Image (cartoon, rainbow, N blue to C red; front, side):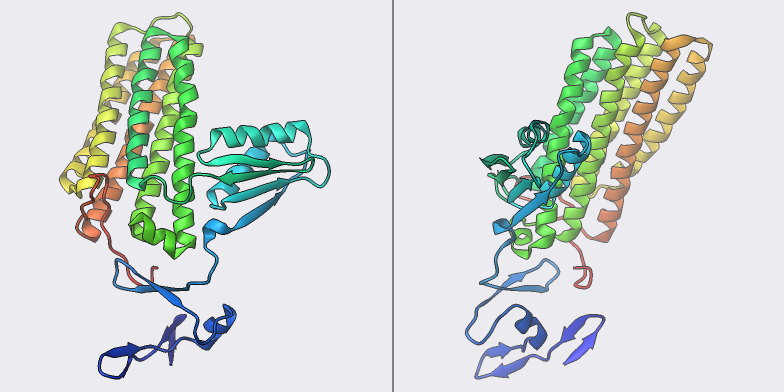
Length: 360
């Protein structure tokens, strides 16, 4: 046996006419309670390696997690803790307090179950609430989730600018409420990726490599941040009230919003098709948008009060949205150089499938 950098080397041996065998490290076998006659399963990986795990092992989907909380926790802190437990990917969450669970704590848990994709209340006692993930580890292709998020973010951007132009508080409120839909999709995707990293069987079932999982998670995070900026634009409606935006400035803001939306779409397309020229065009377009922002800033320099503040908020959010698209474009360039794009059956984003055995 050779050992190097944590890897155990074994020579391939041949028995009989066509059978090849490799011995297993004794400490690995003993640690998992295995012995002669037990069955091992093998999963081929995109990089040519094999993942080995016992057939008798309990999959991650069957695990249960007990979450100890206190009734005096801040509601926001408790909600964040539950999100973290959800992302960890456990199918059964038992939220428990040391004594009787307060109505306030129970309400936070119920609100969490309503907002997330998957968790449903299975059982309640005086001291606990048990949540079960009813959708499983791989109900939706991860690329499809990213595309759905993009559609939602685009609609939010369009409606946010409409609310700003029309000073329509009802449209603005709708954009703010839809931000939760983007958040829950991001958390759901993050949960799937986390589960795939922990369990090789789940990774094999989603038909993605580890670099691809990383790419989609980054794309999801970027889309979630752009949605936050759409919310911020909507919130300027309250700041501005009925005070109108000068027509010239309004037109320039509309052009910037359209350019930012185009940059995001083109960045995702460049990631989909490993299109380096299109990715570079996104980066160049963002620089042009920055110059346009500077021009609008000079235009509002003479304005006073809440009008100048509201327009400045919109400008900043449009610029940040465009730069998030630039981040996606840079990811697309990195992936395109790393390996050729791999086509998918659903025609969604396909980050190149390349990774070394050591990285896995």
